[in-house]
Amino acid sequence: MPASQDIQGIIRRVAEIIIDELKLEDVTAETFSPDMDLVDELGIDSMDLATIALVLQDEYRVTIDEDDYPKLKTIRLISEYIKDKLPVRH
Amino acid sequence: MNSIAAPESSKPKFSELLAHPDVKARWEKVRKYFFLRESTYDMSNRCNIRCDGCYYYEGEKQFAREVGDVEAWRELMKSEKARGITYVVLAGAEPSLVPELLEVCYQTMPLGSIATNGFKKIPESVGYKLHISVWGNDETSLRIRKAKNLLKKQIENYENDPRAVFVYTFTRDNIDEVKEVTEELVAHNCRLTFNVFSAPVGYTGNLRHDDESLGRTRQSMIELLNQYPRHVLFSVYNAVAHTHPKGLHDLYSCSYPRQNPSQDIGLGRSFRQYRTDLNWDRSVACCVPDTDCVDCRHYAAGSAVVTARLYRHANSLAAFKSWLDYVDTYLAVWVMGYEKGENLCNEIIEPPQAAIS
Image (cartoon, rainbow over all chains, first blue to last red):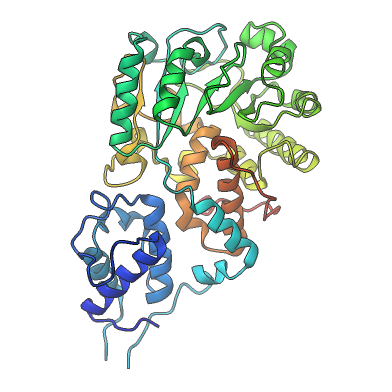
């Protein structure tokens, strides 16, 4: 189960997953800018994004639609997308 | 307490798929190549044979001026590398006629492949994969390609060459010849894969497939795959994807720019198809331009289009294994030094979108 479902917690966890899946060595979850353009600045491609989406689906139990990939260009956008799909707390 | 939505009931978690050791090992093997970003390049507007149904001599690209200047090509390769391209496909009309350009490309861009008819040997110093097109036995080649003893010449040139993959293109009228051609290639220790003739726009000849010929093609592919697993680079899912009554675009939504308006990520963003004048046009850019998209079942198209649909195939263990077999095959066909593993799934799995598209 994800550690936190507030937006800051999701941002941190998304950063950790990207670092882990892409084996990034010169960045940490703390230093990873949530607004960095993952395609333009980090150079990730559709296969990387599909992998990250599958791992995030497992983690948060939300469906990330394939057609939405192009919108998910930063950690913040991914995190907001996930947060919008999470059920509202009662 | 948090209320968490249940996952789609029948769909396994990705981590559950990767919990299978054979799946995990294959996934880790193929994902190392996710960095590949391709573009394609017409090298010359000349060819030493003339085939019925040739894609190059359709449409406007055949009339582009030929740039033979090696420095211009060197600069092009440098600029391609700078914009993130890591893999080049050198094609049309016949690249073996311009070996000096192939050398220049290889010096700058070390990963790639060349589509050739195999009539003229490409120097061994060009370390790309070589895809040698075979359209039937020598009798058929003489009739369709006006080339005498073509298979014999191809084998003479590329027997025991680790770069070479023979690509047998199934047309509607050469299905029964594949067995003898495969036997001949295997006897000379040549490796092969399969392609399916996909009609150029406006093509009215008799090579175009129908449902019956696609069914027979699938059966032949699977029989030969089972009979020669070391020499035939293919999988059951390759056969399914390329012989389905629906074409690749209908099944997987082609991601090449010609059919994909999005420029955000993937092939729609980075892929270009350069003509011999070193220009390109996004509106017609795909791996085999001037193919009728409805009829497209090209091996080259599938290598990108099926591979890109990772997400859709992570919906069952059999589908994911089939996808891994497909990607493993594609890498063995296209990347020097990559060795294909044993296929993980020998069941016939319907493409994920086939039932609903």
